[in-house]
Amino acid sequence: MSILGKILTFVVLIAACVWAYLTVNAYATRTNWKARADNFEKAFKESEAAREREHRELYANREAMVRLYAAEQSRADALDKALADLSAAGRKVDADYRKIEEDYRTADVKAELLLTTLKITLGELDTNRDRLIDLENKRVDLVLAKEKADRDQLEARNDAKRANAIASEYAKDNEALKAQVTELRLTGGGGGDAIVRRSIERQTAPLPENIRGTVVKDMEGDLVHISIGIDAGLEQGSRLDVFREGANPKYLGTLVVTRSVFPKEAVAEFKPSRGVSVSQLRPDERPRKGDIVGRLSTGPNFR
Image 1 (tube, one colour):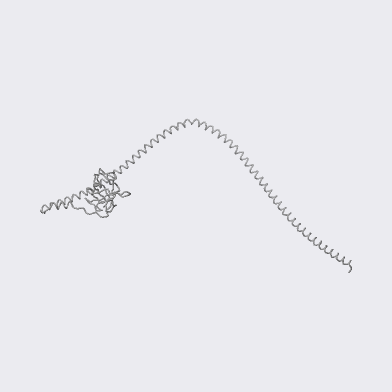
Image 2 (cartoon, helix red, strand yellow):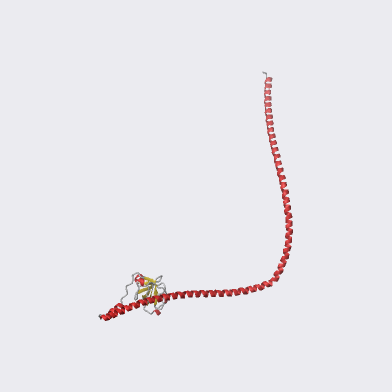
């Protein structure tokens, strides 16, 4: 092949390549334009649908605004009517207020008079209340005094019953002793008087080791009322110690049962530990309610 043929062949090859490129480029361009046209058509349809939707919404909003305007117009008319009614009512209230103010000025004098009367009434009420409280306090005092008198009377009756019982027992013992003396004299027994004296002056029985009681109430004279009696082993002539416990324990003296002895209590004569008369004792040396009664061996060691 000649050089010219080769050149022509090469030119034809180049032209074929250019033609193929242009063909492919035209196809691609047509395809891209088709896709863009489809996308544009789709977007246009969506835009139309959105526009139609917005148009319907705007129309609905417009209708709603029209109805709202009508409702607000009706409400405004009602408010105007209410305002007119309130204005009329306000004018009536103003007239009533002026009348009330005038009545208030007229009633002010009456109010002052009523206030003065009220103060006088309250003063009388306070006075009557004070009198009533005083009378109530006196009534309570009288009731308490009556109850105390009733308790004292009951206690006195009980003491009288116990004293009568003890007197009856002593009378029986006396009669028995008289009979014994008479019998001894009739039989001519030697030393009859001594035997009778020994039977009368018999020794008291020893007290239990654990005997313990308390002073029931403050000492009266030289007598002390204690909380133990016959049930605890006490009898006429029994001797007990009385002492005070606490932060400052103190031995006070001796109690000799010389008076009434009952099952649960007794009355004893107080013998001070200082060896002086009861009238010379200090207040803290006198037995008082709550002090301990018993044998010194069972109490604190004071000696």
